[in-house]
Image (cartoon, rainbow, N blue to C red; front, side):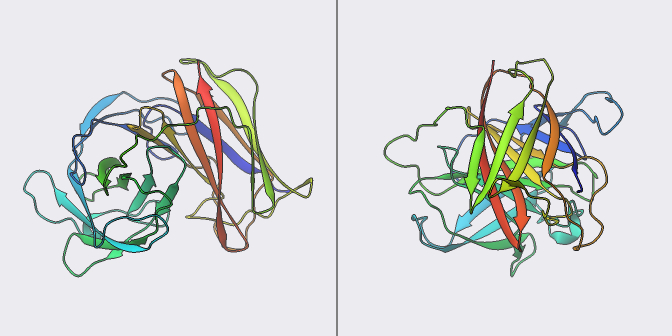
Length: 289
């Protein structure tokens, strides 16, 4: 039985295995060049922290208004912050099999989407089809690595119109998630606390038996994305260790990781795996003391 390599989950931006981004947001559909802190930890240790400013800005233009359960096409525009010139796929480096990852969630942190747009008609434009489950605005983080800098960036923008009634976040602890007949169980060795490390794992089972047939998804056996309760930060987590080199490799049933949160508060996590060619998203809720 093959175990999935360990995951490192933390609330700092790390290049390679884990990414964290936080930033201010001032308007719907407008890109915000977000200042982030980068600290590369990799597999062996920490490097010097450095401040970085995004060199790319993001704008989103749904062709029709967002409406629950209705599909609409969204036009994504990427431009350089320095001169406003469009940034096309040629100006982006590939990361985990894709040059552009969009991490999308509604204000209640329940309707999460991980989408990869395709090139549009004009330079710097990309398109994707989107079907929201909520009649609300959605926040989008674009995960990109510009060729010009070679550094990972997260740029944030909103799309759609905010609901009349402000969404609330269910901050209940969720340690077990059942999706499509599979059970995902999150276990932590101790209560997560800001500034302290805690070991944990996610185990996948089906009909009470360990499930070790996780297929590669975006060059890994799993992706975990987390959103903080302030609706202003995102974590993008990839497995550590050897990644699959062919579509025939399989992983699971256990995903081992450790959490070293930097700040207190609720975090909604989504574990994304692929089973029988379908992406499965398992939600969890964790409160950091």
